[in-house]
Image 1 (cartoon, rainbow, N blue to C red):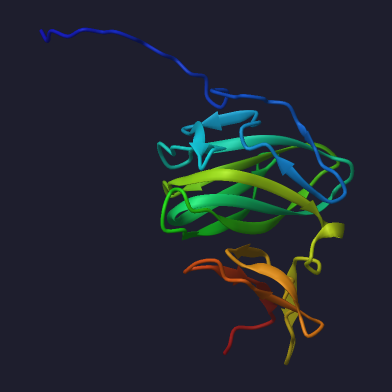
Image 2: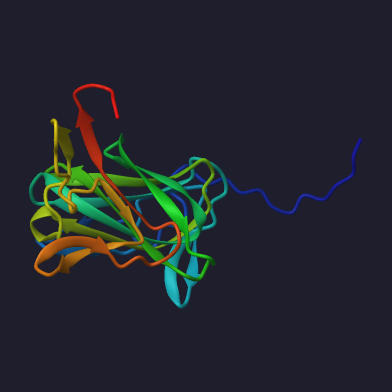
Amino acid sequence: GSAYNLQQIKLTGDGQQQSTDSSSTNLGSGTTTVPVQSYNGINGMTTGTSNGQPIVGGVAYAGAYVQYAVNASSAGVYRLDLGTSGYGGALDVLVNGTMQTSIGLASTGSWSSYGTNSTTISLAAGTNTIRIVSSNNTKFNLQQVKLTSAGQQQTTTPGTTDLGSSATVPVLSYSAIGGMTAGTSNGQAVVGGVAYAGAYVQYNVNAASAGS
């Protein structure tokens, strides 16, 4: 038989490893920063630092995730901003165990350069779990998690625009955004401030019938 030395055996429960602070974060009426290492579940990822700031990263395989508990005073739509670094890919966002959205990540060019990727999610009143999942084995570092209540965003109500014979899609009604920001120009709403190559803004529309 084979000869070998065995020095160590470790077992880690799924979703409960390396947590620094697993308490829930209370969401205010404006923007709330969720401490990135205050997760209540993690699987296939590790904690560390980047540019002197705490991060979660080190994705080991597809489906690796980090999960946070937040308390919302009322049900509603929230903008979720994720500060990430990496070389592109996608993340899935599950709320209370249900898939709500995917976020495409543009490359930031290095592991130490970060960009903001945004989407909208719906939260129930009370405690919610938000799980951020690596899609297709996307490697990324997560440095920041922010939630902004709908009443404080610079967006109109995110949603889907029904198309008639002619329709204007409100420029701030995006369903997802990455590496860009909302603002105003000449008194009109705009999306701009492109931070890096591959930055994007995404809209949902309903067409009554197929066509061009």
